[in-house]
Image (cartoon, rainbow, N blue to C red; front, side, top):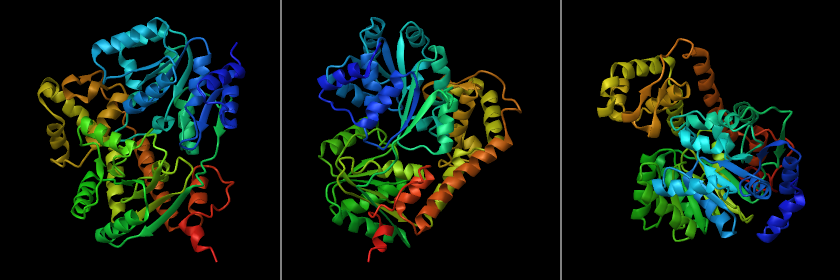
Length: 485
């Protein structure tokens, strides 16, 4: 029977002792047989809460993670400590994947990291059913509740995966989750409130100075950005919603001789990895990025985050500013509000909520073009549905929705491999569900605008939104600064 002493001994050997008291409490809960939902601030040591118990127990811990880069980072750190950990993902060559899975089959792995898509492989699923899973960890668990053009259907199937594995004990981890998202996580993981302990260590980040200013034009924002860059020393991230805006700002900064890196989804994977490595290693101090950068990134000394465009929700905003000041030293976060940016986010909401008629039209097109899909690309399909509007990403969302409903199979996001599984029915196309989802996204955007317009402490208002209402004014934001005599 594994005890907390066994876990602490592993921590001691890895020079990770003593554990923080919240970490120790979480592990005691696991040892008592409870499932866990951890909502802890970024950088608070959530990963150790599943790593150490899995290492101490008989069997293997299985970690489901959304990003290959995040998995590789965790595995590299574990191996440096001498832990028997590995990951399996699509970025590996076939022979290397086979080699790693063979070590799993031999029982030589204590922690295995995978993306949820890996469970589409029958051979992999069979291997895991023959392996004793001591703990199932779902990292970045808020991803379960996402629904957009980058929605990953397999993430919402983790509960089904768990059932196939014999319902092992679960620990779900995230830095931000509203009450609604918490309910989604429990429901989709097939957990009950009675069997699951919620451990909320608050979301306080006392070292972050949050400020927001209203701008009258794009040029006004550029001036504010340049001023901020001159004031904040050290590593900085500037977030953009649109790649086109990022590229324009990059051009302006280059003309001013301000060195920087760029990171967005249109870059080749190699270029993104190089940019990320340079920033994490300190060779690049300033990074211009879309939200594609940041999930699971471990850089403690980021001194500032600036939002050049409005994000879609307070959750997204707080996730992104949370990448600053993880070393507990002060960091300065500036939010540039421009009314016209709201229109961009409203367009995104339309993209993220394709109406039932659009989904029906897509399905009918897939049926009629079934024999031609192997010769088509996404833009040809989009042109038929969106009148050649390349900025209309409803297609990606709708295909993901059809996949989640098991109407199609769309492996590796290749039309050439798309197959129809069953007819689309009237029951699938719920007008009420579509309207509810659209309203939900609009409310999230409205909450962000209200936060900007509000007169209270920036952090208190965010904490209240996230369900933690017992906080005092932080004394370290622009609203609190205004109240100082």
